[in-house]
Length: 254
Image (tube, rainbow, N blue to C red):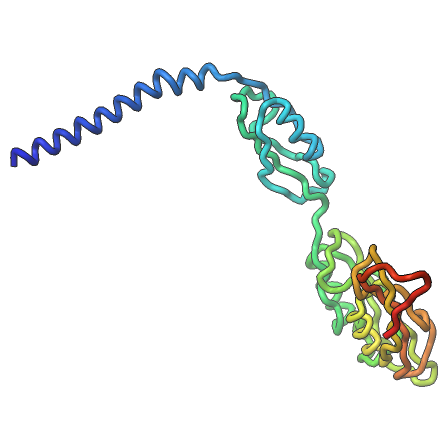
């Protein structure tokens, strides 16, 4: 019992000693250093481009930290819309300054409108802040009144408030032929699907190398859009590829 009491007393004395040493270090070293360390006034960086704001803060011996990016229509993309601590506050040198940056106007993903009626398409677009744009009625193998093509592919990012045009099926017009759809700018997969919807098919594919467009993007077509051809006829495509530059006038044909 006596040994247990002595052990407890020793532990208490050890804890007291550690606490005492810590208190002395805080009082004699850490607190005086903190109190005497240089201070500076936080400059205002709201409204500045992120790179410029960070430069200003670093020049003031402060540490800028990007805290969050928020979509904001009132502030240009990449500008600081809020800072913490605020401008004019007195802080220690090296203090972190948290920046909240504008992501520009909000963007949304274009939904799939294929197979929908105009009413359903309009509702689907308005629900996410988009509008129904141009509406062209063209012959196709789809039921009359059904959307079979759209201006932007599903998943394309566009700004809220923008319009999305659609092509609506007027059914098959056997006597006058089928209007060739516009395929330029679409991916090869989209072009194939659009032609199939119009009861047409892909003809010869001519590959041309491009360093500015994604591979498998349609550059040109023959016949061009707006022409009328027979059901089942083929449309030749000129499509990008991302290989080494071609020799002059060289075209790879599939």
